[in-house]
Length: 360
Image 1 (cartoon, helix red, strand yellow):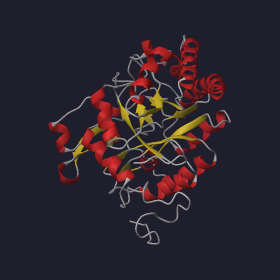
Image 2 (spheres, one colour):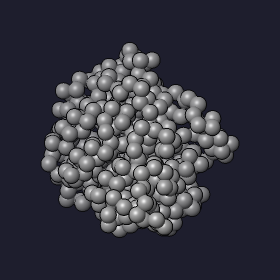
Image 3 (tube, one colour):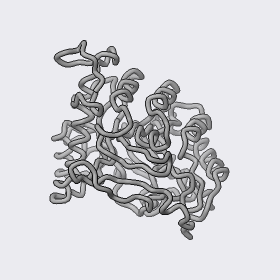
């Protein structure tokens, strides 16, 4: 797509910055990327501690690599500070590494740093199910794993303890983020199951997102608005986007569609054009807000071509990303909308028949 200066920008996640990966990104018309930092353990609280703090040399090399392909590193995921999350000895040292990393991002012009806050991500509840045309969808079923015990290295944590820990973290980090000109985006608990291996999840509800925003009153203390997770929890993605957008707390957007059987407990991630989320309505709301940062069409279904021709630069298959980018950026269907929206008046579409009702 062609980026607009004041509108949403498609960006996809890459796990490396080699030429073949970045060529494929640019061939999709994408000019912004999200960096997850490469493969880690299933619980990304662990396994990346030695990558912190970021430095101008190490992170700067990534910025230069993408810039050589006409791409901007628009958001960077930070992981590897478990002592801060669990409230253990060494948390102040962990927090200082995060602060130094955020300052580094600011110096290098990276506008957003994303993070997670869960004791354990309950990915054990995921499985693949057959979807449209034989594509593979991610499906989650909490009942199959709800009684799994805590892992020794993680332990079990109450909501009160997790709130205490994140409050301590935010009050230390956000002032430095403000000074650095960097926005911080907390990704919701996904899956949003209420208990994850014995630990309560504080970011598995919309009320939790609202409480987070109240801890430090600053646009730097924001969320990753995920319209798929919002619907997984039974929420209305348009209303939730409007609430946090009016607060100026949407610092990043994840873009996907789902079919929810039991809120927070059982759902299936599907193609953008067949789920319960009115994707065009969500996009209209983001445009109304003049949301200017990345929209990441994550978790694409696994398509046959990706099983035949794998590429390790993408967390999901390249063909799946090509579908989600095209559907988000150029389509007239429910999932499309970037080119079909009039940025001056989101109630009207652009294109050959601008006065035609743009509901799919």
